[in-house]
Length: 349
Image (cartoon, rainbow, N blue to C red; front, side, top):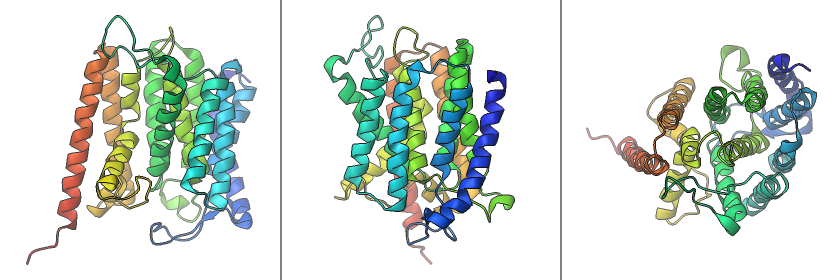
């Protein structure tokens, strides 16, 4: 199929598959039920991941793109989608999920050849910091962290998919400036598939009675695609940007997850213990509606991505980008901690 039509076709296919899979999921019992932590109304089908993955796979197979470099992409994605569906049916332990995510990252690096060989020019502007023998283990560690960041932030309608789209869009801007048509087409297919699912995930009047969730299969899939995209685009002689810039493109999920983990560990709890202190919980606790909170989170993500793009095109040193990201992280942690203290403080008559 001509690549000119593959992107709108991907959008339509994702929407159609989502609409078809939703009633099938109800019959099969692939549903998310409300409980003390999940406050949505009714049982919601968990088929977003399946719809997105099948759309991407089908569209790319019909496209004119060379798929040889996508071996690790497809292999890792299949592992996460299959294990994610099993997890959505019968909740797996954190250990089993981490093993599956680690396997996906190993396939991405060892089988697909996409891994972090260097961390950019952090200490020497003329020489990149090479990882050598720890390249693959470091990639697995960092990749599993990012996958979990997107999985953990998937707690509000439209949030995980929208933040992934911001990342894909930022990479797309750099690819467009570099005239990298292969990457642009790939990101177009991925973004269109994600957007087609979003029609049934955002809280709109016409979708209130027909909503669909990503499920663990979908949130971990999108996290993996983000990892694959950022790693592939920041490595090699034809890298589009540095690993330091990549941090900014996935800033909100990363900062939110690190903040929560630090807070949980400081309380003596497991860093993987579920709670209701994510950014979207904070915004809703402050009185914002679901769609308002979603727009604020997207806005913050766009600001971070814009900062990363600005520093990239202005050729700001990698070390300065990392230091700036650390400063923003400290501010994020401090502001969110103060906000929670203020919101939870008892009212004084």
